Image (cartoon, rainbow, N blue to C red; front, side, top):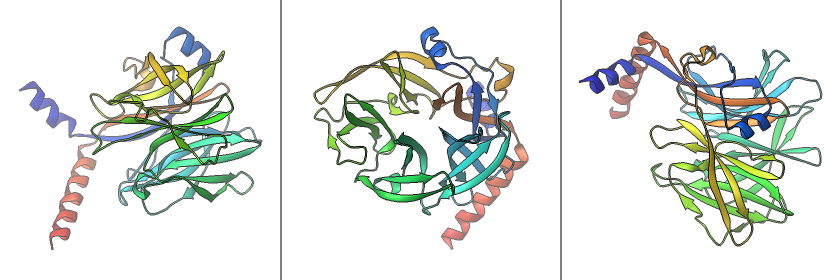
Length: 309
């Protein structure tokens, strides 16, 4: 009876992904295996939008720029946008960067030789593509396709003179299989690792942000989706990474502390990225909004009826 009641009560809450940002030393978080910062969760004015998958990019002006998934409930797909924050984490600008009319997310950014490349997830296209970011005009342009695979959350690290792409493939979202590819050049061509798929499971495989390297040790943020999607993160410690073997082991867990007053309404966390002493994350916030939930229920019923007609 309690579970049934909880299920109906849950339907009264409006749930959406939002982005959080805070100052911290990632070395302290990793070395202490402790995560309970006072996160500033950024508000979203529109109820028809959510923001997720934040990646930080550097800027000369002293502001903070965040690449993110900009999802529209009305259009039912994500775009890649750029949010600019001032030193107090107040939004001062927001700009659409890429809209392919199909779902985009996880705009992984890699900077090399003062050039920033973006590798957004575009599973519906069946390809992993590369774009270059123009900081002067705040635009991106297509460079080339990297892999002819619908790889999820592709994340790149350079190690021992080679570039390594980590990403997952899944069937109907029921399992995540980790695949690794390597190349002598950032833009490829990439070779599939002989051990692919490296491993599988809903925890510890799908990437959850850029690699974290501390004192020569590589840590890889991954998603834990065993109970619900994006519930928490498992930080893996990479033990071996070469053309013959890829091995890693769970190191620590990152989850929302619901007793922290800064996390009021927050239930999950599933991405983390770092730039100097700035850390960005994302998570799902529950807001008690029965009227909004009723509006969406009626809207979906109307859409379903129109499709039948």
